[in-house]
Image (cartoon, one colour):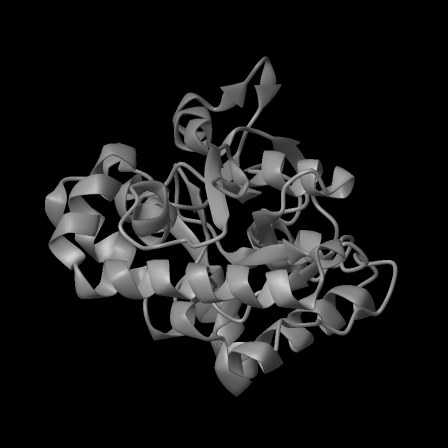
Length: 286
């Protein structure tokens, strides 16, 4: 009689980098032993909000959102999305300075995203914003409105970082570059988090399989890219390869000491700025 496998529900974004990372797990390329993985692909802000109910055993979360979820989830030491001198961007139809952004209305992909927290830190002030699905931000900036609300600029994530110029938009600030200039560290954007109540043995097993999936993708790049390409909105093969390389790399295999320091600083600065109500020290799977 076959033993029942432990179901691990995984949540991640429908984007090329996450698809690349999870290719091996999603397509039975590695032996998962006593575990059965199922995948739910939804945008990161939805995953952030769903994580408050701790329904998924393994989920992508924004580092910003983790500050509100640390009682329920541990950060995996692999599976990070780090902006190493690049990251979310603010774009507009005309050239603007960062100072000129402060009184404007900015479309954001969610108030729990790390992009939102990074922009809040960059501006050193609260700002007027409209929450817009991430894949509709560029059209909203081009149109100058979303659902009847005026939009002056947009905070773009994911593949929009490579395609915004195709829409005749201007870069105002690259928050990954701003953060690196400020701290000398990469900007910690997203992570995979595993539910604490699974217990240490299962947590270690899940992290081991997640890392094996990432390693498989990196070692079978063309195969994993072919799978990931289906999620590359407006990206040709070259740009999809570039985008995956930006967010699935050595940082994804392990945060390492600089990556962990980056997470700690990001959360500490968020608390100092009054965005995060509590000082959170990040906890990683050992």
